[in-house]
Amino acid sequence: MKNNSKYVDEIELLYRYFRSNEDNPNEKHYTKVESDNILIDRAAFSSGNPSVNRAKLTRCPKDVKDKPSDGVMGIWTKDVKAIRLPDHPDYTVKVKITPDENNIAHAEIVLLPEQDRMSRSVSRLFRKMLADISVCIIEPNPS
Image (cartoon, rainbow, N blue to C red):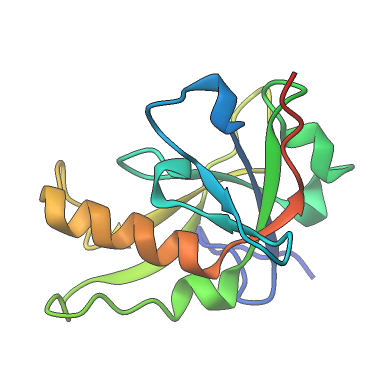
């Protein structure tokens, strides 16, 4: 059955690459903790609408990397949609289907209602909450 919605179903896995910290020492995209787990930082999400790839339309998670040293995180759509921004009850979060000619799996995580620019504090909070629900699937491999 085809999804005719402009938004991704609630049960889809999403992939997003994140840079190795060595690529930009001034902006850490993750922290490796004592248990060897990797915690994603909000810096791993660009401002604006973060791009993701729909796992069911991607051959392999490593295919979403921009560079070989990048890591890959996974995010469930249901967790994205469950995000509620404290003090901003008017916003809801969805994953919008936005395929392009080079990437049929492309989608964007959007805050609704969409605005031309969100405040810096809302943007930071939004990116932090996305980082908190993300899980490292492929560890970055610095050169």
